[in-house]
Length: 433
Image (spheres, rainbow, N blue to C red):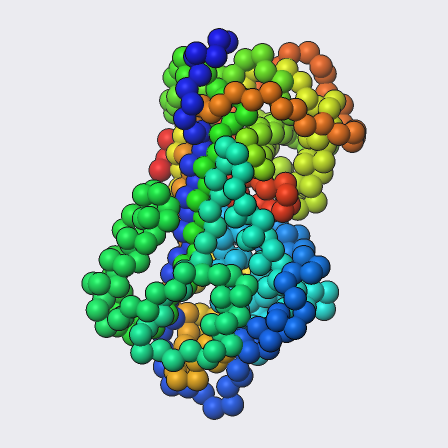
């Protein structure tokens, strides 16, 4: 296709907010409280320098991503799913700095960390390193992962918690008057709208005066395909939601382009890798007809790693005609209802211990939710870079293939430099909001 047929707009817009709206409310302070990790973490961080070993937190984060996904899909097998496991993990790891005793252990174990293999200090150093790498600007790619703390102006924090939080997670800090619920609500919504480039608005509808602390984590991703789809070729097409439901979608087409693609001989699916400009790739996993459940049964971090390695093999860089829906989906999840099923039993109860944050009041998490949105469309800037290496396990015919994403599929947005899953999702019905 001639280059003038290509628009130069971005193809992917992924703003996300974990509101943990981790809104913490207060009660009576129990006796014998644990001061938590706050003071010691900052002290040790200063003594041992800045991230000398770059501890690897990505494997645990990926493990958490799959556990979270399997729980969601088991409860809602016929619904779209979309979330950022990294955003959830980062927010709760930051919150764990203020947790003490069993509450801290529950948070970190719930996130997938084995505390006999990785120290608490190394976990926070690992997140510090990961956030630093993701914040580096890359041509054609914008990844903005940030944290925000909103603390009541009458809440006296322990210095160790604030110092450690600033050291490892570098959040923006606000000190609003929480008794002014209207003003605080506007402050949060305006801040979130700005940080997500206007994609998430009116996040908070009402606050109660007993809320004393809010933890917010957001991620904004904007990328350009290395090889865009052509606007002129997008036409209405059928998407088969299930055996009895068919919907019409704008179906994008990309012809006669080499892409990373394999047909798995051991799992009933095909896997397509599409590269962004910069340090990010997308994997689209298309189960064979009627085989979504079988694919989900073997969906593990090891399987994703296997596909990732295979799709660096030049054998799988081949001519593929792709038919792919243009769509927007979103996911909203009440984490205070979901996370207890993943090991966070005490966090949302009066048993929670956040004595590392303040000795002034007993805090507990009253609400926590996560919201993510995904927009996929055709275009980006042309590029000719090719990635290849030399792994080979599967075989596939080398003839020109036509791949139609016209039935439910899985997707992940992946950062190769950090080996991190930024987003994970399942598209069951691309016309559903």
